[in-house]
Image 1 (cartoon, rainbow, N blue to C red):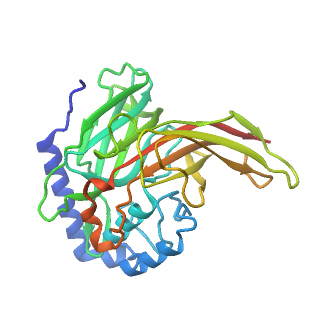
Image 2: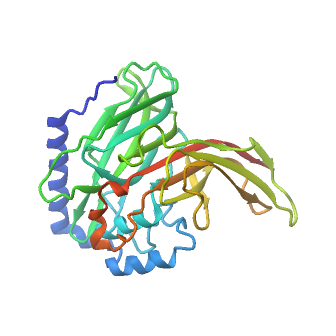
Image 3: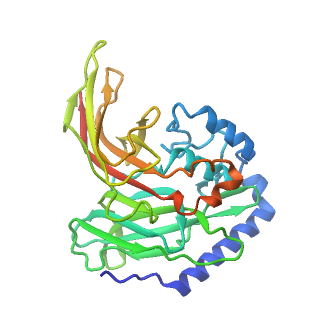
Length: 337
């Protein structure tokens, strides 16, 4: 079993200090530093309008459902906490646009002691870390703190190769925090030469959190059905297939496509409505036409428990383990000219 270097004393002190600094900033500069995303009721209305296409991107964050009137605070998209919770219940894990090096950031619920599972493949000679950054409420808004509340080295020997790990989430306990919290889950790898470190590729095949979503990898074998497609001309449309496997039933599932654009993957499109969320092997397709952009694509399938009957903003904390989630990933698909 891989040891768990959580560094509780140092991390808790740093996290607590960052939280106090953020709150102090909010007392003096909140109005000038961020634009409030609107009231929880307004967020509910916006989300209701989007149910036909909950993956519509805004502010560059595919799957994050960022309202167009939101701003950035301390480098992160700012939300009223309850609004963000409603978004996650309705639309599931938010895949934040990943860089081309394979690092991953997912915004979702977290709970003390939850099991977490990850299927990943780092390169030999690299150091790969898993981090949890908790969201904090500052006045009317909420955002992830830059200081991780938990850090774990996933590949301490640097051997590389595909690996599977399961471990329990360990978080600092702070006064006034809910049992069910919102967090950014991050996986990143780097290659170091002395003190000089650069980002390194790491492939994350699947990950999930919560006792009702974790046993083995419950969302697995995400794949494109072909390696490349030639972009059609005229009014012709060419189907591109994908498949995935669910080992357990979920309440909802969706797919998202990201396209390589510069140093990052940019959100391209998502499924309209849901894709199958019951246990089994499933397949689907998306249509490529003359308006489709050429280049490399990656696919994310997200599945989650959506707390049926608990969508009002003031009730999300009652979700408890019904806020569990999982996501799987595949890349390697190209649209050629």
